[in-house]
Image (cartoon, rainbow, N blue to C red; front, side):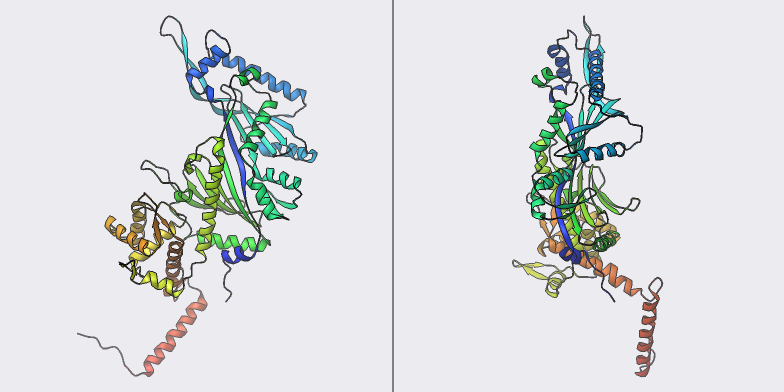
Length: 534
């Protein structure tokens, strides 16, 4: 019988390219000095010279801006696109971007117009006192937004969206893989492309070095360079007075792409991956993939999903607003992406200057997920390792109780740790106890959980995080959890019921043959029928 291929077989021998890169980056642009009611009033009165800071001034500025955009598009003969509701904007503009790519020079390829809900500044009149006055606050309104789709010589396709209403929030989208492709071309590194990435490369180390160079300064230079060239609600006088956009992170995707030498290797890898994620690889708690401690008031759910309703299979693990996903890219590459929709989920501040910290944590999350995948299919234990866990031992002169295979409580504990396989940090008495009690199907007290945590720690299967009551699984802990669970659930348990449907017919026939031979041997021994005892 042919032994099924494992992910480790393929990762260790069939990988042509392994690349980490900042992928899609979606930024917010905001004016720091227009965030409070007093700042807005100061802008309208002190800076613009109006005696009364009335909300009516917003319309005057917006009207002037809309006229500037129309004039800019007409002057440069830029296509004007009115987006319809539900339309995928990038698909509409794609032909224009592709044409611009052939020309290879930086320019605006289209101006798109859409009506969208945005958080903008609204004003309310107050008639208290001898003169009327206004107070300003944020409100969600459906307003006009302009999408400036650009082709940039360094970054390739991108867009800058400017809201036409005060305080004119901005959104900027770029793609790190597209930037890396242009840098690789300029550096003379030959490559072939994936749909969003690299399939092959003449110099993998040089390409990885390029991907590592995409930093805050380059991204900020791109954003502010285009904002200066495009029509905006602010003029040079406003900018000189400090009324200009700062950048923060709205969504950041950090990817690791492992390209296999042949498509069949990629398919085999992902089939093995999905097979494990059907049961043992589907953790209930994935918050710890981001190395974050949870506060008592955290109410969001953490779950994984295997999505088969796409063009391929996507394995998602969600944490608060963010997620980490695995999928097969273009039928030949395994991609892991940490998608951060709120930098706070990873304990990182939002401003763009904190991007290096966020990228480092996201890359670490991708690495830990890959390590988990490897452990899940490489957990066979040598006899000494099994004996150390399954039998009592002495650790620094203290007795470490056994974790005996087959004991219901131990198997529930292993299953709980296995379900939390992605949890390299953040295992607590409370979170683990709930899972063990569910698998055990019986009462399981806090004291029992404390005893089991002590057993796990003394056996080297978990380690306490300094200064906390939380634990992280060690590599040995991951292997033991998977080994115990797979051996019990996927081997021994099915074999004990192998004489019944749905076990395969050849196996049931073989077992009946063995049973016949055993019955014949018993009959030949002339021991007779069992005599009941009193």
